[in-house]
Amino acid sequence: MAARAPWGPGDAASAALDELSRNFTYGALGAGNTSLSGAWYRRNQIHLFGVLLAILGNLVISISLNIQKYSHLHLVHQEHQRPFFRSVLWWGGILLIAVGETGNFAAYGFASITLIPPLGCMSVTGSAVISVVFLKENLRASDLLGMTLAFAGTYLLVNFAPNITQSISARTVQYYFVGWQFLISVILEILAFCILLYFHKRKGMKHIVILLTLVALLASLTVISGKAVSGMITFSVTDKMQLTYPIFYIMFIVMIASCVFQVKFLNQATKLYNTTMVVPVNHIFFTTSAIIAGIIFYQEFLGAAFLTVFIYLFGCFLSFLGVFLVTRNREKKHLPQSYIDFGNIPGKQMLDKIQPDSDGLSYGTLPNESDSTKSQSGEKKEV
Image (cartoon, rainbow, N blue to C red; front, top):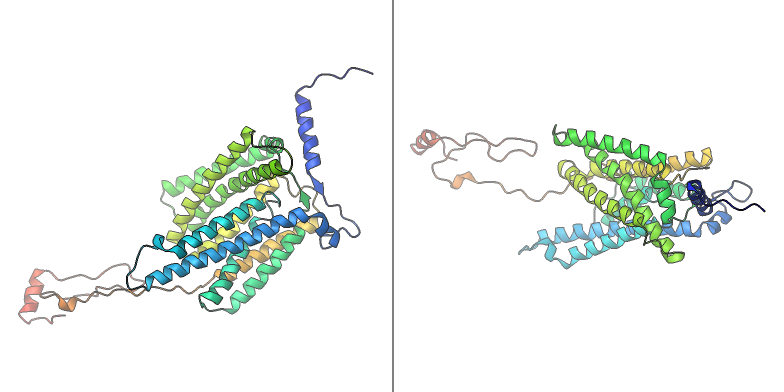
């Protein structure tokens, strides 16, 4: 037998490809092996566990948001108001948000990127149900239709998402990290981000599309790094320790940094625009960016049939439409406005309205001293 040649540069790439081929498990189309068959559910128990974590995490987030809303309303109606951060109920909502986001993060270690972000529609629909039951808000026909569409879209997403199970190890992430697909996409994203940031900072453009596109570009990095970190932690628990590789800490830093800047731009959008506009647009942009990231970085649609991809995209469309219907034209509750009584100010006359209309942009004017002197002599009526 011929002596085996020593390892060269090509052997490392071959070993990485061999590991990738072992990490992937594709669902072959055949009799009794369709997406809705019992065999599919038995074969994808880990995949469905990730789905369950994501759904429960989103529902916990919706509960926490309503708890915080209730705590704010409760504090407003108290005779002696105190800061919201001194409310035990408010801190309970914060704790539940942390639990829900932890569930979403853990779900990336079991399910695909192209499935977890679209399930965010469950948080919106769950929040609408809870607000009707506990906060006594009105239930509209559009809410019922939106919830129905969101549930139908979720069912299609769970059954027709890429039928693939992938174990994320450090070597797998390193292989994808230097792939030409990811390098080209990340360069294009950086260019787009810099252009939008220039118009936002230098030109003062604060349109909702610009702000939420910046959020979506950062979200693609968040989901890529989040799945890498969660996957390597899961792999370390179930198989072999992966936390000693530098790529784990690189991905962890990218995940934290992208999350921080996402929150910054999202807060700017919520300050400038109504929540009923920000929530559906952000859900659509975030989910689309995450799906594209999963396709490019983790190649999650590799080998999928056209019909499966079409029904998956149709499920995404239904969830988008459901979120839009649930959030549109929500009634806004305003606190009572304090009007100024100028009748008690001696020597002052109101020439124009002082308290503006809700749509007005300017206040009225007060007369000068000569006018006030005339008003005291009775030449003009005192208000």
